[in-house]
Image (tube, rainbow, N blue to C red):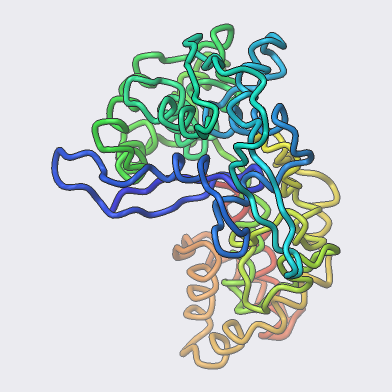
Length: 398
């Protein structure tokens, strides 16, 4: 089943469409085409929220968001004329409120006069529009052409960046001639594979994940910038804030409270909500704010801050938040209660936190700590769990 991406609130999301037959192009529009040309209620047509999740709704702001999301281009570096040309394609979008709370209709309004009937596409091609023609469809048709490199280069580069921690073009949302790819042949190969698979993102993910490059050791042979830029080793990266809190909750069987100051879509999320599924940038928690979750204000990848801080270390080492999750964990209590011997408890904790068994040296250290008499058996389980949570092996991708 091919996977296509959409963008809401500056973040890329995956959508599923039926697979075409072998060697056949999809009969229905690509998801990005549907996203750009959608009309209707934000309650009933989710795609239109792309045009609502912006700081302002003037055509140039919309054009900037479209270029960043679908082309990986920061239009701040464009000549003003070029941005004006692109904004023409989005100058007939209109908004209408309804009697329903928070409902809004987004639609193509042919009554809005176009600045020009011959706008210019980003590749310099001038097109002729009819007065009643939705210019968004013209742009979307151009964007999704197989011969058009903008979209395919952008999405394959982003996939590579998400998986390897660094884009073939770095930064991944700064595609321009002055910022060339470090490996043009690799980017061109991934583009060809994406197009040949009818924009099946799963196919590209599989190619990268099965590659020798992705499976390289995280222990580098050297620390040169050239080695890092050419993916000579797997880059060690701290887990994203959302992934980290979800891992803590899943491991301990606990939940997290997420809320929003803005009651849209919810003031308080359901108890079992996962951080990676939060639909809105305003829905957050103290943990997510502390660990660098992006506010989704600009849509730039650089909004996320994964740099470790002293406050983060103190929270993981010494907070009542983490302490409660561990001490109240039914999974840990059940493990301590039902284990046949102390070694099986240690094995269970290592499997729960690090997904592996302890080495003989680690097992000996835990045994010595438990036998010292300084702590009770349950306290030793809590201390071991807490210590493993603070290891680089748990906190980092490697």
